Amino acid sequence: MKKVLVVSLGGIAGSLSRWVVSLAIVDHGFPWATLLVNYTGSVLLMILVLYSNQHKSPKWWWRPALGAGFCGGFTTYSAFSLKIEQYFTDGKISTAVIYALASLVGTYILVFATNEFFKTKWAK
Amino acid sequence: MRALLIALGAGIGAPARYLIDKEVKKIHRSLIPLETLAINTVGSFVLGLTIRSNGNIALIIGTGFAGAFTTWSTFAVETHHLFDHKHRAKAWVYLALTLILGVGAAAIGVKLTS
Image (cartoon, rainbow over all chains, first blue to last red; front, top):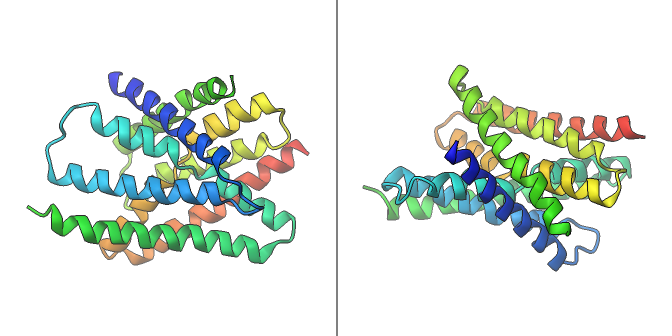
């Protein structure tokens, strides 16, 4: 139950951060803010997973607060899927494909590079 | 005020995802993370429903709840994990299902409100 509360607080912090990023970035018709939060949040979660695989967790609340809480609240899938749906509805097929590829390939490259970098650094 | 509305939705969305994830993993563990898939599909549907809502509902249910309930980071780390452990076919299936079900669910949500 304590963990659920911690996830809730982390989720609030993450979601408010996502909202602040969306206010700060002028998107010019392309969802740059969503792309940015999804990139950074995925890298952060990858670092967390790698770190907790190799280290003892410093505090019990640390992993749920930052992982399921902050990273989960900060990144979002629904904004991505709705945007793709809207591009399709508006007939902007190429923009939909560019956005989907930028999100998927970009995230994969970042997460892959993060894994390569930290797995040797933190290897036991 | 707007921040409070988002916090309200996110304060429910994030722990709801956490609990569903934990409970599903207790009953059923599969290589393809069905719990994340279901969460992202349902959350996309919910966001689709809010598309014609007024500002406050959009902030609570859309930006707050659906935003925090669904997750891109877990999806990313899980997909990478599948590729990294040579479960390539499962990784592609997970990727394709996430896209098709998520976008489809969002479309159904939008349709239901129009």
